[in-house]
Amino acid sequence: MPTKPRPPSAERILFGQRLRAERHAQGLTLEDVAESADMNWSYIAQVERGTRNIGIDNMAALAAALDVSLALLLSKVDG
Amino acid sequence: MPTKPRPPSAERILFGQRLRAERHAQGLTLEDVAESADMNWSYIAQVERGTRNIGIDNMAALAAALDVSLALLLSKVDG
Image (cartoon, rainbow over all chains, first blue to last red; front, side):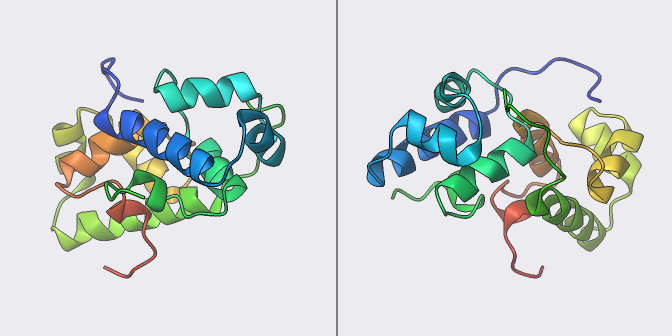
């Protein structure tokens, strides 16, 4: 466990932006991804906005729902 | 929040392995990384073993402590 609270990381913001971009690129709604990933759509919306310190297992489930690698959703390349 | 518990993801295991490999490649101890990342070394050891569903902010802090990108620590390339 960390010894101090931290502000949201740049990576958290990046992940949310990349997740939303990839979802839009595939023409999927939050509800579509929520069903595939077996999560609530409102949780995914929060992740996209960067308001959740999402854990790696849920990150992996979202990447799988979009059929992309988790590394891709953390890369700074546009696309 | 997810609606069901999940088993540890392959990405969780990969991240731990890549973290340990990168730490060893740099000749750093758990204590070195713990000091840089401001975390307990025992927590980092658990992350390396894949027994923690680490959050993205802590993942980012560990990548920063090793001066590598988070995407690198989630890539499947050997290194």
